[in-house]
Image (cartoon, rainbow, N blue to C red; front, side, top):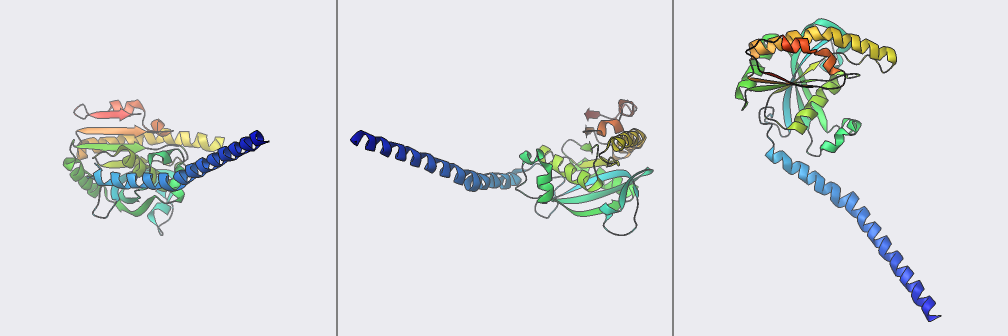
Length: 256
């Protein structure tokens, strides 16, 4: 009888230990771990290298864009005026984003999370004339430590606003002290098989636009180092022939 009682007590104590351990793990995972991660992210903003893109406002950064999307409306927010049709002329501009300190690399796995939480918000989008675009970009390139420029090209199903946000995310993750711009093309042609084929055709016809844009950067902005990052269907808009056709005095380093 006594042995059975002791055995029961031991099982009860073991069960309590398991419950307490599980409760402690839950409290740590839901309270302490997220707080610690948020503090680490916030602290990392104090030691960021993105000084060129940073504005006077806290955690606000300026990037640039060039797009061959056709404007479908003359009123309303700029990001909603551009459709998914291509035009031969480029539209230039800059955009400011506010990046919350809680934004982490792990959110790359689930980008809808930071879209919904607005941890990267578009604060201001402004169209620029080509000459003003070149002058502003040239000043930042000249002020950067390596006189460099990073060009980002996104791919299939990418709409204009999401292309801007993802470009800011790339800058946030890389944390390099160089101006960053996105070459945006209308990849949002639908998710069906027909939409995919349309996007491929648009990407291929956009290659000439991208080649001309690179030539503009090399000849007028004149970075000493020009890096290109392309993902998804983006590489279809920059075939290697447009990279090898650049002037020999330029230093073009594609990262495909």
